[in-house]
Length: 278
Image (cartoon, rainbow, N blue to C red; front, side):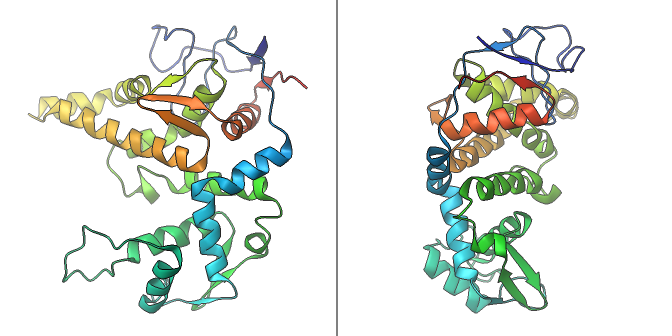
């Protein structure tokens, strides 16, 4: 059996209660029992992992965006793409206009999507702002040459920016949901069994117990709050599916070769030793 071990001692965030051999500490730090074991792990060959990275829907879209930026695009005084550039981007990438915008809304129909793509590519080091120009970087130009490295940069940028709590502008529980991303990747890929989304949601609600109690004490619909947390957890999972690190089958998450590779990297970076088959 491949084993995972590390220097993380103490009780998990849920007190003495055991969760059938798997305890994870929300916040990106893994808290696995010393006797936690995973099935023998074998990573896919590098060329297969690179191909999987290139094929991941999120990577495909961001790559198309970086190629569109090319040698430069115009930015407005606010540092965002000009309206005409947003229209051109939408046509190039096949973006759908934001359905929630009112006809008299000051935001253009593609402004939010253009903003998110720009921020994501910028955080991943694939583009950069220089004055009133948005430029592709050398890393962006060569992102297909080192697809796995570029894909990892894209994943790290996603975690940095946040999904449920983008740049700190999400709901009160958004940071908790985003902080669990690394844990979900590991548990879905190397725990030796599928990960139920309901288990993830239950742990998130346990982490937000004070918020739920405050809501109930003030006459709030606690069940509605739980459903909101579950909805944002589902949104994060959908993003992980787009990144190619999990497969979602109904309410169950299963591993992928790319997800297993990432899970091993996350474990090692957190101080754990992972035994791999050659």
